[in-house]
Image (cartoon, rainbow, N blue to C red):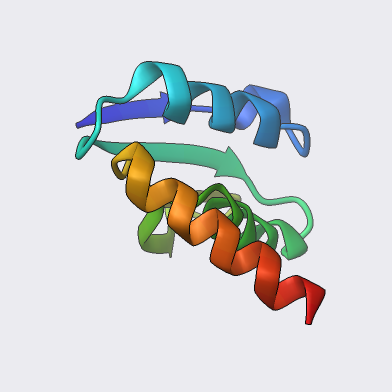
Amino acid sequence: MKRYDLRHLKDDFYGRMQELIEQGLKEGEVGIFLFEVGDFSHIQKSADFIRDLGHDLMNSLKFNEVDWTIVVKKVDEKTRLERVASTTQEKAE
């Protein structure tokens, strides 16, 4: 399990979070990502973002008055690709 503090990135944390999942986590490993919630829309966007990447969003919770954490489990590449294809197909319909 690894913990990543993305609060310093403010609203621009998605790219870095994706990079950390892809390069910083091993298959089956869990990452905890901490980000600042200025605009609460980032909570749903982060959940959608993880779903679109094809990984498991295990938890999403308020850390304190301004910070949020999400817990993500990196899945194997085959599962991830199947999920991405399924999500892409759903969006097309």
